[in-house]
Amino acid sequence: MSIPEGVKVVAVNRRAHFDYSVDETFECGISLLGTEVKSIKDGKVSFPDAFAEVRAGEVWLKNFHISEYVFSSAAFQHDPDRQKKLLLHAQEIKRIDRRVREKGYTLIPLALYLKRGLVKLELGLCKGKKMYDKRSDLKEKDLDRDMRRDLHRALRRRNED
Image (cartoon, rainbow, N blue to C red):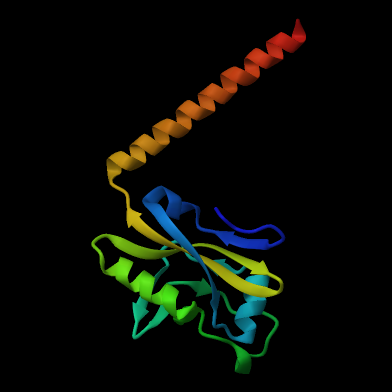
């Protein structure tokens, strides 16, 4: 994850790195309502199957659930599942649009965080992994864990002597 220093991470989409290979990441803002911002600061977000799409030169986030803010009146509540507009530079949107039109690429939200009081989203340009890619990733993770465990045991035995 390429989130800069000095930010408060609200949520991370861990499933995205398992299901997709991330080719490029973009930091973008989100057009939100007041109660949505308060819910995000409380950590009331869910985005396991969220994605973004480019429509008419704008990027829209879908299936991104922000729960209603419990301390506001009914008149000021927002729709939890409404589409949110992502704020990116025009050149970035054009580049993203070209890449998404290629076969297999999609836009997946990777992380949501607060940076200098503003809500930011890390958006990944991803390509879906095949089942054998997922298995090889799990095998690498297991081998790495075993290697670290053996190294830790060897260092502990060495310090005991």
